Image (cartoon, rainbow, N blue to C red; front, side, top):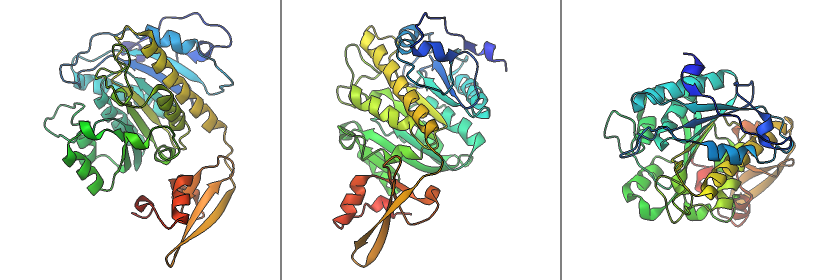
Length: 358
């Protein structure tokens, strides 16, 4: 499969030397970031695959500062949708594999939320024991048809014998939008389910759910809408502009990040601020990835012991990043990411059950 047969290259945009646009190439780099824009929304009820114009987003993104970014960045262009939605899934997985073979992080922008299935499937081909974190206001576990939709893709990931899922974290769900049984089931199988209220105002408490993530997807429905809608299913409540940008930076800072999806964006929005917000969401992701790549490999850790009843528990703090971990293993990879808040709670005699569930 030739890449020119499945992608339309972006039209050139004039930028100044200090702007991000001067860094972008049109070839998949080694150890870089690859932007791919997608117009297939057929995973939604009554969704279509009409060709969308992402020029406004690109213009806003290209004009942002390049700062001291050293990581190579590619804008591969717009994915050509397949004859069927299933064909688009197949084509997208081919593009994703091209990125993974070069150890680059694909960032898929646009398309319906079920395209997360393809991100998981493509990554599963290259590695096992995937840590997947999703920001979405909806938890849907329907498994009602063979065709992949935004309502059933999660159930298909969970039920597939071919997929190797280590951890799943669902962040930003809103109680009034979800079936009680879906939330209850997620908790029964020991997946972390975090309400929108727990994510607001600060990233500290929920940052640990991104720290080891291999795959992160954002359903734009989880973002507070303005004007004619930031997402294709606009919501009055959700993460605000500053919060979602802060979280995207945290996503970029993940120690294991391999793939990112930003879905359900309303590309037909007439409001420039919606395109500007998406551009800044992407920029903060890039900033986080660039910072993570510059972190030293060798770290020093301080250990703090907490006594609860007759049991001792170890918490460790990374002296470089000031991030916290739970456990006493000498290998950091075996420790559980946690927050300073969870350490402070443990000192008061309250240990978060998620830290000892395994």
